[in-house]
Length: 104
Image 1 (cartoon, one colour):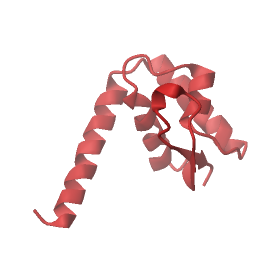
Image 2 (cartoon, rainbow, N blue to C red):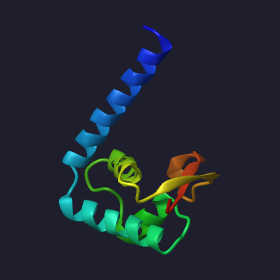
Image 3 (cartoon, helix red, strand yellow):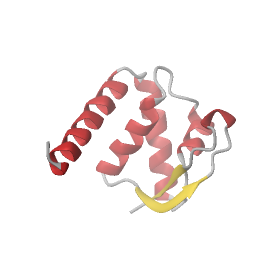
Image 4 (cartoon, rainbow, N blue to C red):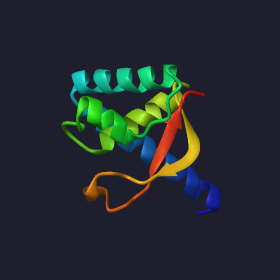
C-alpha cells in the first residue's frame, strides 16, 4: 500500500467508527451535546469536550461518541480547532491533551 492509500484507509475506518458510535448513542444525549457545542461556538467561546461533558454528561453508550460528535460538528462548519491543546482535568485521561475548539 502507498502512503496515500494508507491515509485514505485510516480516514475511512475513522468515519465508519464515528458512524457506529453515533448510531448507538442515545438521541437525547446527541441533541443536548450538539446544542451545547453550537451554543458555545455561537457565543465565540473556546472549549473542549470536557466543557460539553460537564454540561450534558458523558456519552451514555460509548466514550467514542463525544469525538464523533465533535467531528460531525466540524464537518457541518459549526466548529474548528483553535490549534491549541489543553491539559485535561479528569485523571482517567492520563494527561492526554484535548483539542480546543471555537467557531470558524
